[in-house]
Length: 157
View 1 (cartoon, one colour):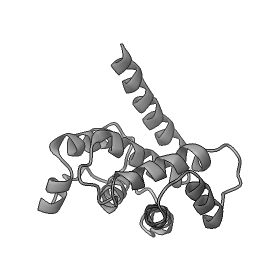
View 2 (cartoon, one colour; view 1 turned 90 degrees about the vertical axis):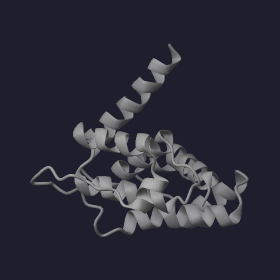
View 3 (cartoon, rainbow, N blue to C red; view 1 turned 120 degrees about the vertical axis):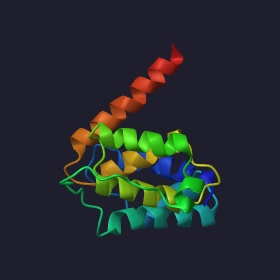
């Protein structure tokens, strides 16, 4: 998956998944919308599979960690997730926006993007999608959303 898959995920998130109505569009409706938007079929399929993997992950429920554990990144993770991304991910956990199990899910979903370079902007979107997909995480989602938009406002000044 390349950056276009993340573009598709962002498109879906902004237009369908974050909508206020309770009706979830089915896979065929999403596929049709994405085809009409001009995305390639192969990338659409990979994006829809990415979303299904997020929704069907049995370990996706937010866990309550009993102790602060130190996360050691594997060599593969260090290659794919640069120091800034790993640091920002740990920052989100220290702020209480992500639990340890959510951090692991975010790492899994970032690596599943198979993008050449994973940056902090991509991390932020994946964190928003992970938090949105989990029931009872409205507060953490709102905090992350506020953090993202506050940083954008600061960058404009």
